[in-house]
Length: 485
Image (cartoon, rainbow, N blue to C red; front, side, top):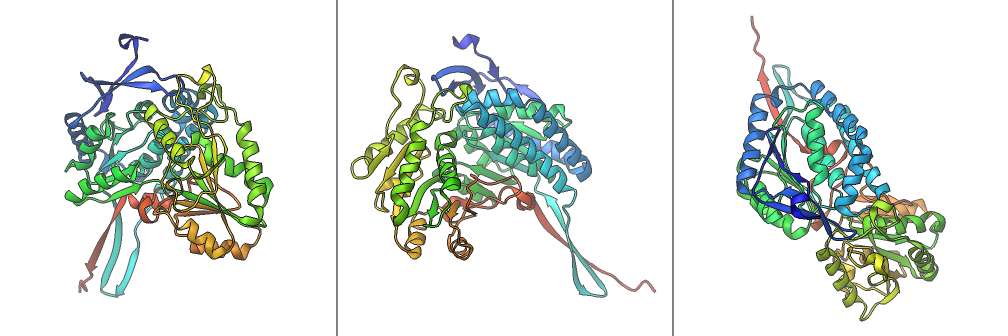
């Protein structure tokens, strides 16, 4: 398709579609062909979006009651459900993920708006006991204008995850979606407007991270920033925010382990361990990418996993296979470089390359891979690959298992597989991660479960009631009550 025929998607600023002279091609990862163009915003567009958000906050949104904000969020949730199929189609074209996973993403996005619609009506401060002649209490107030920079792997779900609590709490928002997958964010803004969200309360400025993202992080009109992405970019966002003395929420990925004890339930563990590393081709911040397994059950578990890996169906996301392509040629090259290095002194149990055949020639596909005999000295043990690569390491004692799990600089999530509740509690207490799943592994968990990282996985909390508190600040009011007589 020629560029002249590609549908164009403009930025959304103050409720208007803003034309631009610069565009970015959006590629379908299954065949590398452009299927749309999106506005390439820069400092000027970002500045206009922040000003629009400030105007909407000062003149409209800050005066809207929690009850009315709740109603609007519910209508947004209903609108997302009403366009579930189309949103999933766009998400699959954008990201390459199987359409079944994209449909789930649309459901979860709606659920975020439902959850915070309910929660905001219960948000309030507290009274503080001091003495009879003094009344003290706290208020929870919105920050004002929040900047949101989101990644390409779960654009619809993460946009809803970060926008729903911010909007429900009374903030106005400027969203910068990833240039690789911006379309569902723009459609979300249109649906929110149709649901009654006032113009300027939600603005979307697509573009490159080093242009639009950097401008948003550094803009002095932004009162709070949320970023999900790589550690390197997160550091740059935090540095920019520090210059303006504004708080940040950073979710910077992980190298999350499964710790498997000899008394694990294989029937439950095997399919979930497979799903935790192959969902969206392993492009998941909390993917279970390391398998730390007791030596006595190592061989049987690896064999069972390899059998499942070999049976996985790979193909274009629109065909709803078990696993689709990676997002881009750049990401595929990164994953293949990791595999080439690991192949030198680890054991490739299954996969390790690119699927053969003409069907995979143009897309960004990588085989689901299991690497055994991986140790802490290997780069694949420590670095986030962001692909369908499971690294297996054996252990003999619980202390050794904890040391292996803790060896990386990340701390986002972990799975514990054991029938012994005492061991499960002990491990949950020892692992320095934001989420621990016992005899389960749900990447990032449910909408209600707080989600945040330890160590270099980030700071701040998203999801659950904690996120609503993150998007408000606490004001204390103390009143001296005099005797009127």
